[in-house]
Image 1 (cartoon, rainbow, N blue to C red):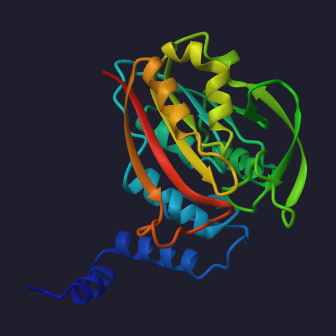
Image 2 (cartoon, rainbow, N blue to C red; image 1 turned 30 degrees about the vertical axis):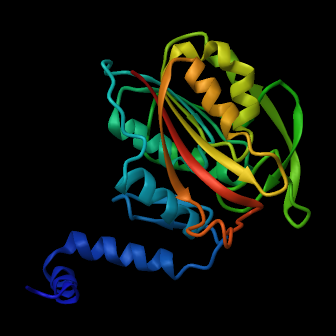
Length: 265
């Protein structure tokens, strides 16, 4: 059996595509955190605000394909809450080129990159909205983490803050939604409670659940809402603690993060 290291170096020599992928990956790994840069890892150039968060999202979205879903339509309607720099929106358009998207992102720097990336790739039928999804139309203080962890809840004193406008998700759920993605850094429970009576219109729902160390956990509330809306759920732990009885890892004020997949039976 040929050792993996030898296979790797052989592919670098004889496979130009593999070498381009490897070089792009190494460039990102060697880029300091919170440094705006660009990458061709997807096969085309896109702009990003942070290399580490990009690599995490890239692995989930394009390698693990966690948002892959089946639709009977060629033009499914998709709502992307927490679009960040646009990786999920790009993936949805790659999966269903004729899909129609509404993509929300309140972080000022991430939204700039989102606009650049969507326009650079000439993707159509995507409405970009620079607002946070919440349970009312108002103005809230937003904490910019500098990567993919910006939020309107659990603000930290040492982070940049500014005011952002919010929008009610329920105002977009009065029609069939083929895929709803909620990656809104801790606001998911309040938003789902506000629109739970309209979730019957959603076929596939992804929720990234965030557990903050100094707040009561609300996972049971989300599971109950999804169950009552007729969903069957799967839960995957992308970020957790291997030995939670002994030690619980804390990142950005969270001691657990879960990916919740809700779908119709």
